[in-house]
Image (tube, rainbow, N blue to C red):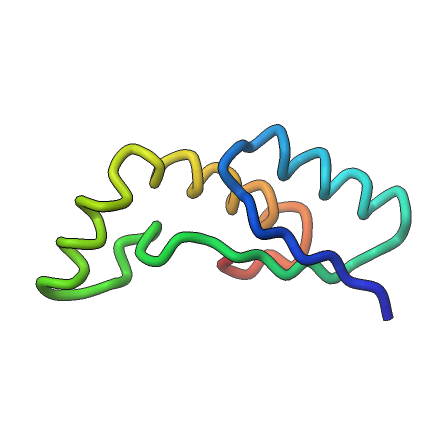
Length: 77
């Protein structure tokens, strides 16, 4: 069983390139390390603090994760 571990999802183009290479090689498992809270799923004071710390990086992570969600397993990052 082959898998790819992707630690940097900062650019949609980079993620798309990895996913396309996976498709070319018939690799179906992608393990992605993403930012905590990119979907607003962290509640309370810590979630608000985390959102301030992530700042403008959050939308780019959301787009990149959207690329993997649509093309791979269709599950959240």
